[in-house]
Length: 143
Image 1 (spheres, rainbow, N blue to C red):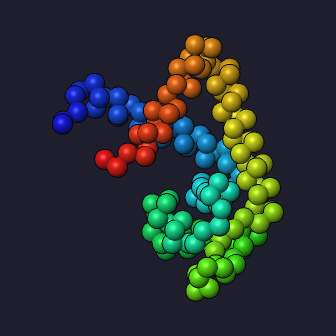
Image 2: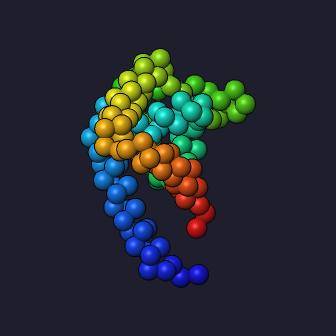
């Protein structure tokens, strides 16, 4: 089914607005967004291999290896053998990584929460809250 003009326009406007939001959140980050994404995923999902992280983040394994190398050098993640397959190496958050991630989240979410509270009416905040599951579905779409 070809998108209607309104759907195409909405998709275009949403892409622009989300891009602006992501750029603003990147500016609020304490570290590069690729590193934050890996730390966040390890925090939410637990230890993982570099190749699994690359697949989940939809980046090339070489790019993920570079990001992981930076996180290892900074002491934010650590390697350990996979107990089920000793040929595999798992990456996990260090205590320092968990602390840095928590501080970064507080900072970014603090900015976003303040912006939502100060810029939107109560009704607009309700609409935004209702849109979150819809946006989540769109991001998980196989289309």
